[in-house]
Image 1: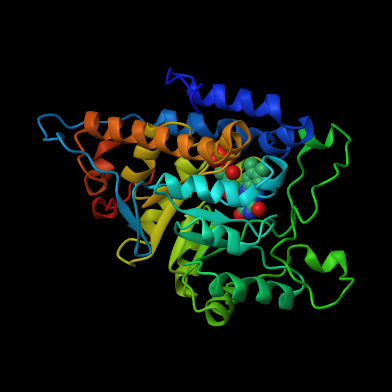
Image 2 (image 1 turned 90 degrees about the vertical axis):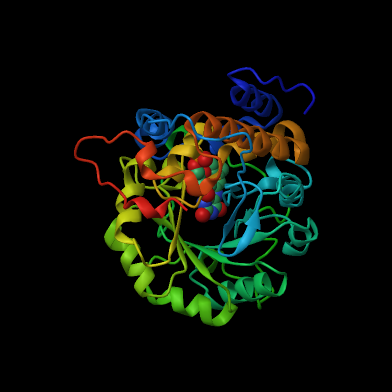
Length: 366
Ligand SMILES: Cc1cc2nc3c(=O)[nH]c(=O)nc-3n(C[C@H](O)[C@H](O)[C@H](O)COP(=O)(O)O)c2cc1C
């Protein structure tokens, strides 16, 4: 995006460009949080509240943001969260986002509610994971999961915080029922019957931890559980065979009033200390220094939701690439200033303790 100037508010400029190009309903749908938007509106500020304790006199002449997630190498720990309906933001939908993500050396997570076939995501050439909504129709879900494995997804991300969709009054107030581009939410769901029951495609509300083993068995892939906000739930997921947990409140789009991920992350990291289960986080990551805080608190990677959709709408694949690269550049800069030449040096002592907050054990920043 050659128009992008790297002044302080560059991401706000990308958001405005996206708004200018998107239909109003999709711009609002993207930004909306659930209920009174208490959780959604507080997400970035919760990272800001964590103050840093930079190290001095450390050699940061070479800084590397490279890491691995579940064994997959990535150039940046800033990854792409699953978001629905990319066809509403760009005519090439998820194929464009996956291409931009690959160009940034990041990892793309495909939503179940996607509009371009997985084969096009795979063709982008970068690593990718498939997010799974377990649907009322388990066979439909199983077909999606098996195709993800066949198409080269390297993990499944089970979204566990959506037994029912959260209500989003800001979006509902528009009162529109948008015409979606064909296949926008169903390109990767292939029903057996010619006229499937639309209710069968809704999220199942009866999931238990057993679903983790089921998904692992039918796909042969590692399982990441997304939507974890509590240490005890993280342990339940690990005990049921999860390879990673992903701290998220769904961008504040599910239970309004849910704790911010900046606050929940240390509890989850502490609960999983020594287990080998990786921890990721998302929600309100708008600055490289937000990513730095999350990694210092024990996240192995962070994910971006809305900023990627803004980049896609504003600049297609290049827009996605530039959002990821620019935030990664900010992270690199913040790492140098914090005295952390690699992500392994991002440890909890970099974050100033908040009285009463759970502290993660110091060896979980790697
Ligand atoms: C428009 C939109 C669509 C989303 N669709 C999905 C989805 O299909 N599956 C899912 O697990 N999460 C979905 N999410 C949640 C994101 O994966 C992520 O948790 C959240 O957006 C992160 O917060 P951020 O937008 O502040 O970065 C969606 C979020 C948005 C904004």
